[in-house]
Length: 335
Image (cartoon, rainbow, N blue to C red; front, top):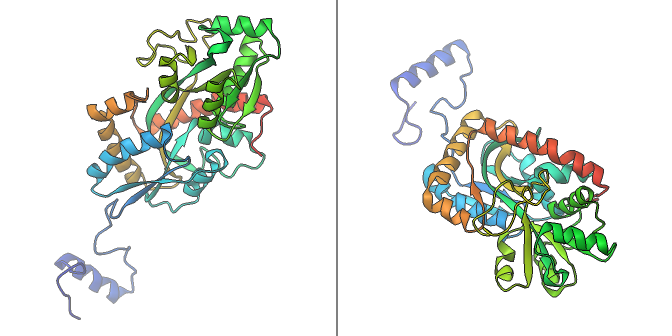
């Protein structure tokens, strides 16, 4: 037997092990030439929404420095459809080798499955959380024709004109939809829901005055707040945000429980080796410690998070405990 130099070169110890195995009919663990270090090839990160949105932007901002840390390209793969369920399902059923990861959100991993009669995947059992990448509070936006600049004024005008006002969302079962229904319950209102296929068309109709209210991410509406086409009447968080420093929080406005964070979490298929999860987690945290990365996230009102896989798993369980009852009690459906 001839052993050539190169990828198959054996050292003396490996040669002795092989000979002993052959002599005794023993099957050696595979591979005997050294275990593949992850990642040995590019890693695919599935974003379950179309390019250009906040989730996609955060994933791309973090993927760049992750590539540098891991020494392999981290490729963002947009797989939109079914409110994010299509992309999440792809990862849930992917090989458990760390080469296909998911970006999960409150829609895909807290709300969506609770609204499906036959969910495609289990948001906790089918995934292993790696790290929370960022969180972003939503805000309550109103068209200028409503004439409200605070949440109290919106409540007052809506109560004075029952059935006259509506709210738009990116789609049935979306976070914007659930937020509107939840606010209706808390404030005793009857804002009528109008579903769209995405945030962009809903925002366009808000600007045109065809809908009156939206519960949505902050970045897309900022230019229109500056032009006074729409007003932000509250931010659904415990503290004010730098992008809207003069806008009250829902806590200040008298609705302390109405706090809603959108979030982006990196996840692997359940059963992915712990070493792979740890390496991916380290790469995410390294990216989020970079001040330039944190500044880019702040530009879209996203707060860099990070932390351990255990902390990410605890965060996910808390979001499930919060949103599943709200989703099931809303009467909404994604089927």
